[in-house]
Image 1: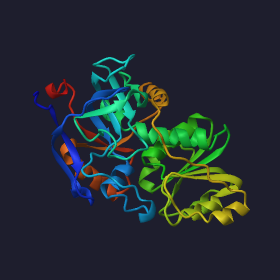
Image 2 (image 1 turned 120 degrees about the vertical axis):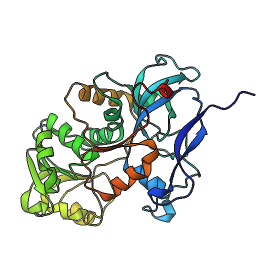
Image 3 (image 1 turned 45 degrees about the horizontal axis):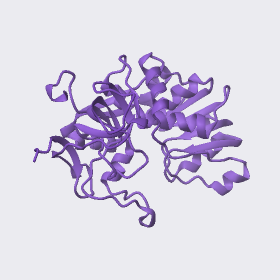
Image 4 (image 1 turned 90 degrees about the horizontal axis):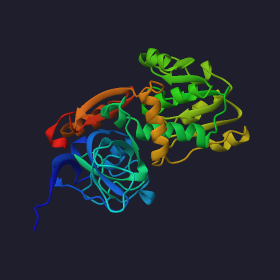
Length: 333
């Protein structure tokens, strides 16, 4: 019997804080029909990774997903195709790719990104342009697709609209600022004061430091609010929106929807989903310099717990990324 091929991965054996992430040796996954095996060079951190690690304790028990243990977190990857699964055509071993893999679905459903190798449906992948390195590519998939899907599928953004982005310096927020500006919107970013220069450089027309100014004191009559923060105080944003405008929560929050309904305010939103072709377009923009992927910090795979602790401290500017393999690493072959 052939010896199983092994790899390093981060797994969760018991729900908890960042310390629940364990770096260990496991069997390398095998791609199924319609899938490829990717040698992962970098993996992006996203909030759902932390939610899963904690057993989705932030979701009411009655509707909380049940995760099989152990599992490997991570849905955002950038790497190189190492093996083709059955019936896969149009892709080749050695091609560099990136993707939001198997989202939304349980982290226990298939190989995930916090590992040296991961399987991925080819429909979830995009070819990585040469002008985009693996670390920045890994920061793009979930946050970039979330921003794009909210702005253009859920909101239906039109040129000339005023868009308020709450939490504008974070992963989704900094992409939303750029994409909305590129679509001809007037964009106002909300973040702490330390992020103002960053957001202005990304194209924000206006800026509100929420630590010193209540948003409705600075902005009124916005057409759309994209709220990447959520939480119990989300309703405070209603006063910044015109009658008949929209508020789109990326995360759940309290928005006093009955009162909002009296003003004709609606809440277009949806769950981000894997989309290889759309991601290819965003990656092309990033490689050409038309979309900046800001990287807050980079951690090696065996320090995934430190990456989760960095996220928990907040005030992240852009994306947190795990570096899984160095360019030229012989183990990456």
